[in-house]
Length: 298
Image 1 (cartoon, rainbow, N blue to C red):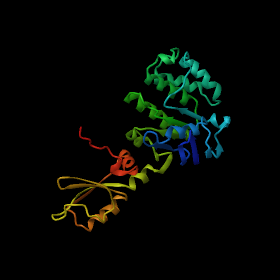
Image 2 (cartoon, rainbow, N blue to C red):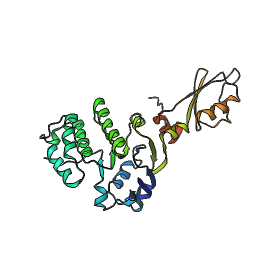
Image 3 (tube, helix red, strand yellow):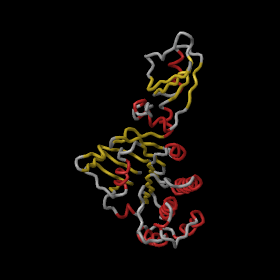
Image 4 (cartoon, one colour):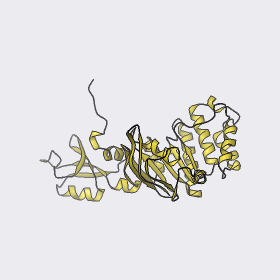
């Protein structure tokens, strides 16, 4: 289990993390989302022991991460700016990883050659960005980690390789109970792989829920009222409303059954509940229409 409790981290007086707390259940895939500058990468650097918090606790399996070499040996991470030695080949980096991870599996490394199909004798800096990211996954998965921390992990990969990589990661979750925390702006992709989601903004984790709870706590409704009702009744707790012709689209913070029951009082001609995507939930949890894309006349 991964826990962060009231983490504060400041840089030159700026609070990059301002009391951030989160909890990642063991064996789960946790998606961390938020706008640029929310503090996601800073939080991840605390989890991997790169940064030391000003206050609060960073715990994995109940133990502090900072300067805990035995615990770090159970964690593999792929940052957005993955590091490698400038003159290193894939095989050079494999030897480097093998020296730090007691659980590194040379057998798995050899098996994954068929998946990534990259010349291991080639200098990594001469590979494309997408191929470098493949090497990062090749090495990280060969470490056989208990915890996998990913920051924009599939950026630069083609659609086929993205699917292949997620298949490998999800296989480790199912077979080995690997706990995965992934930060990404690709919310559509996270929706397919995550079972828990945390939404972060301004150095805080605003909320964290299972994906099922998150989707069940907000609903989009398409409503057609009867003649004489042209506007949405003000007493309805609507986060956002739009209208095209007679069809009103309402976003309400409640489940579909409760929202339908609230609307039934007005005897509408049509009420159709539509599941929200993770992207829509993200937008309205962070501030509704004020956070949505704005039309600007040039």
